[in-house]
Image (cartoon, rainbow, N blue to C red):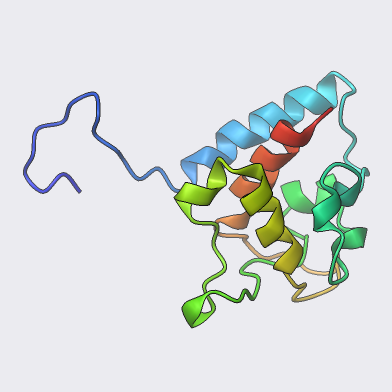
Length: 130
């Protein structure tokens, strides 16, 4: 990844699924403190999430990879719906993207690894908590 360049304090690294553990621990801390419930609907925390049948998605669905959108269909060129890094720190852009996501199956009815969606959702829950 470094292209033969020395690593320094500005070097970026791809961490991919490593963020799931960090986000998971933060969500577990909120659960332990009673600030979040596994059965809480995500739309109650992130209102923009309540489109295309996602109103039924709970925190439990997110953390167990049963939410129903492992790779949601989007309107970006090529069908890529991943939130781009430039938009991740922008809550309006991130929530606008969440609103576009469509379910691939009914929440809770099937398990499938949500490759990159889990990190965006768990981080957003943490950011959007009152």
